[in-house]
Amino acid sequence: MSEAIFEELRTARLALRRPAEADIDAIFEIHGDPRTCVHNPSDALADPGEAKELYHRWDDQWRRHGYGYWVVRRHDSPEPLGFCGVKPMDLRGMEILNLFYRFAVTAWGQGYAGEAATAVTAWAAEHRPGLPLIARVRPANVASQRVAARAGLTRAAHLDGPGFDGHDWIYATRLPGRG
View 1 (cartoon, helix red, strand yellow):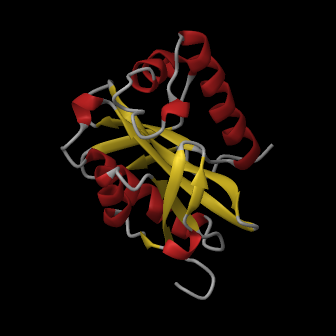
View 2 (cartoon, one colour):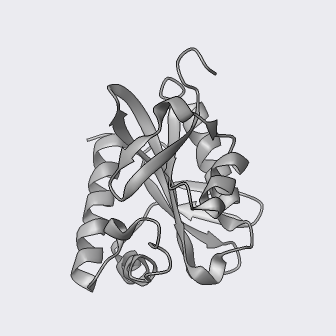
């Protein structure tokens, strides 16, 4: 079991904290909304039991690695806006961190995802500097592309390829030999 490195992050407007069981309803609400998973339909949740399972996978990652996905909220509100974080993965034989962000529709267009992703990117650069950071984005998901770019990732077309829900465009930083 790894010791948590940073269970909380803060930005100018946002507080990011490790998920708790109390967040299962928010996990279901956000991942159960078909609009939030339109580009990644395999991530859509059909019932609250799936949200509980997803929470347990996230919690297990925190226990094993000491980091994971954070719940994002405004400083002035206890209501979750969404989720943002990283998980270790393998991409074409290369150990990487995958940057994830998904926000409630009510939070779209206000810069919250970009602000959270920028904080998580900075955290990863400081605490996991040896691992490339990537975001897998569908070509039609322009908003997600903007979030990745705002967080400091750039297109790495040489790594594009098939993903769970279609073709992935890869945005990355700290790739070996590429910066």
